[in-house]
Length: 336
Ligand code: TYM
Image (cartoon, rainbow, N blue to C red; front, side, top):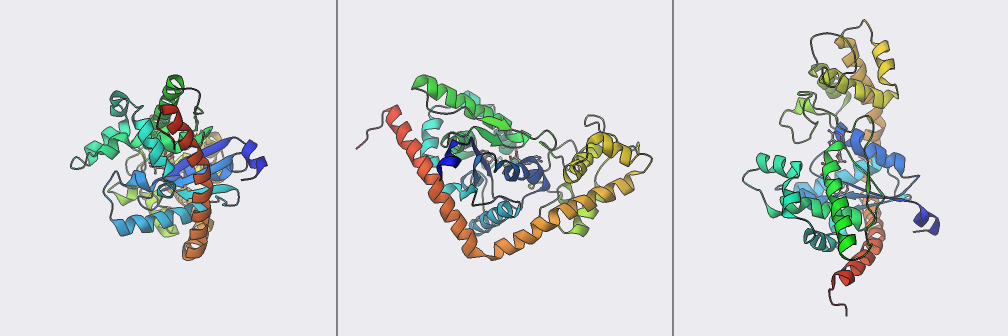
């Protein structure tokens, strides 16, 4: 990497290749990855090792990993400015992860809400990886001394743990890790399910009407928006506590039009939810269309995707290997 890039502050973020990304992934995270890559030296990672904490069909995991890379690139991540790589291609992450696991407390790992949620959801597979998941995520971040981590709201607890582990390590040994800050968008940090707006939009939802996928066609998007659960007072007003469904749709409309909530409220004053939902569906479909075209084009170009990943893994490994050597030395592992 060039000297000018090295002087910039650094970003690291990741996404699991557990299926097609939702609009929540896009609005909460990936959209911001694209925006931040000019200002920061950026590393974006497909977290395939994290995906293994839930049972995967091997062939599907491989396919989803390729699709995830293509989608990240289609959403505007430019591999000439950012490193794009697959987590398992940079083994240093797992090496550091062990050291950080030994510096993470059982109590703090037990308090992670994602661990509790996923344990409840997969009671037959509450594996050790699910429990130590946050120390691998801490390794992903700390190994690059990332200054900023753009994520949605559901990842902020993991980020806090990464900061605590970093601080603990720095105190126990000597200053080693940068304490990372979260970059959580003001609007859209938690996009809610269209079917149950009190819950997060998630691709693992069994009700397909709850989420919009990045690959959904216009008719599907319009239909899902039309069916979105709202309320009975018929007024387009932003009030997440009292009107979570309408507020969620307004947030999405705002993201794709750049309008603020007051402007959206004024625009739909005196109109019923029917025309509002139609308008929301239209701007989402129109906003996703260019990404979908790019996605198909990139996914078909296997050689290009492979090259991006090879370059990404090489660039990331150079940085990550150096950090692991430093940490191994600090904790007293014998160097030859
Ligand atoms: P993952 O794959 O669950 O989600 C990827 C990103 O999408 C955000 N997100 C949302 N944002 C708004 N509304 C929603 N409904 C919504 N659903 C998901 C997530 O907050 C996330 O930013 N552990 C991470 C992956 C990871 C990682 C990392 C992230 C691994 N290592 C290091 C940052 C840094 C995860 O499972 O994200």
